[in-house]
Length: 451
Image (tube, rainbow, N blue to C red):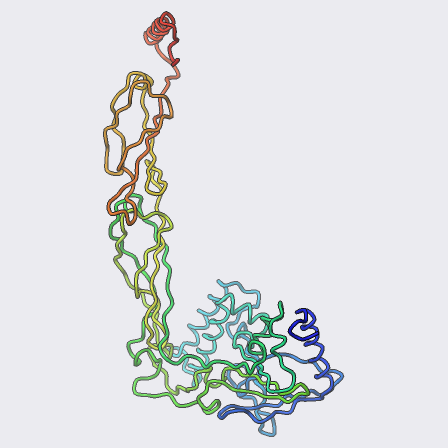
């Protein structure tokens, strides 16, 4: 049976079995020379073949927890310890989004470079920013909880000979997991360097409640928003102190990635990950902007006057261009989307462009017919009630509904439900008249109140 025709579950089991046999046959990995310049290598040693355990994780060198470099007695830099984002923010792993946000704000007030006079103030502040960026995003948080730092920083092994991993790249449910760690099937998978230039900013959403009348006829509405704006102090929002320039990272040689290669009986296993020194940018900033603390953007509030078009309804969305968050590195801002909710009216109900209301008349007016004033969104309007109108009759008034969006002035209809008031009691004189009317109807062959 060829590998291409094997069932996916069989290929998965064969791959896992081959990895287990290979790792139990060796007592350690020997680091091979790196491909390319500027990257760093590390060797991983397994003390006992019988107790060998293989853990797929991010082997990044240079820093321990909190950005401290760990060095052994012989001066060889050890493997980078996994960062604990929950510990950085001072919250538990069971914390919800509100608790995470509260913990970050407390840490930010304490560690902000304007308040924290420690020499490592900027580094400590960036550390909690990185932790909050991951834990505030449900998707990133889920990856971090499951895989640790490797889950949110990516990386991948690539095939360099020996067994080809591409034959195992199409099976499920293991495919997504192996894509994360083996670069999408083992064909020399790598990691892209972080984008350096300006990036598009995020779009923002604002929920706005408006009056029923304003939804019908439109009008201006004042709103207040809070968004990120590009810092005016640093050049184009680059986050650096004015007059300074970044230098090339000495750890990755400006590539933004570090690579580790290990020899195994299956061939060479290679992993690439973001450089821990420059966070994947390939550049080191020595002096950050004092206004934005290196972020390149500042949170600001502002008021806007927006125009509500006639005929909007609950769920309508307005797009305000370039009023979203400013992009990183001086990038263009996103857009602001305003989602409308219309307050209910005590007099009218609405369904699309049509409006519904009620009118009450006496039983005498229903019998004889009359003309009444009916409330509309344009004001009171005369409506003729024909003689013999029955209770719950619905009458239509053209052109008295809401304007149709994009309809060039065309409006919907207003439907009026006629409610006939029947008295619960009558006086003696009224009763005599009604009985007389009933008798007249009987002589004519029909009864009062009957058709």
